[in-house]
Image (cartoon, rainbow, N blue to C red):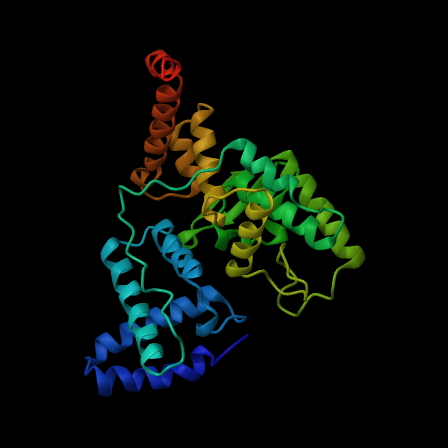
Length: 307
């Protein structure tokens, strides 16, 4: 952990908003709320100075994924740019991680998707001879095999796994519950991980006893830690795409659609309130189909062969 904490900086930021920028009470409250939202997303192990541009972009991607309206997304990003602008003026940082971050163009942005071979390459890159390797394998199997949001993965409790029925009971946005199928690979990986936890794991910290995925100190995994694990596995597998936990969720949905799954069924599994959110995967599928057609179209093949 480096630099001052959010708790230490926020009173100074409040004074900056009032005295330097002269903002109204409502605007100041909204900006502080945005900073608190980001602080909660990061978890207790990172300070404002530790935030990279990549983490900032991942936070914005999650705002998009959770269905927050474009105007609300813009306000949150504006609030965080203001906070890091204050840190720049105070000489606490040399560059803001939010400088180049823009509000996603909703309805036009197509998510990055992994091929099935790339997913398997990431799984194969995990050393499952260790406790953390077994955890990472189980985590990846659940993220991809059930299409969970990263927050849903971190908050997954043991009593919500119904192994006999091969189902997860997930509490999603707005505390709405949904049942999500589990793969045999997910169940096997979780069983292996829990057996190793019982054998060699660190004592579980009080209040974390029910969570499935724990860090090396026995506390619940944070979203940021999952982000780093997924990113590092992609690098180990030789994948050069910009990867995040959401990439596995997007890949899950796209591969289901390619396999013939019904869009409504995919909507239910992902926990999308609006079918319009799910329809982006129709565009992804169409884009991939177009690429395949252009690659293998006889006219293109003939033109290439005569060059």
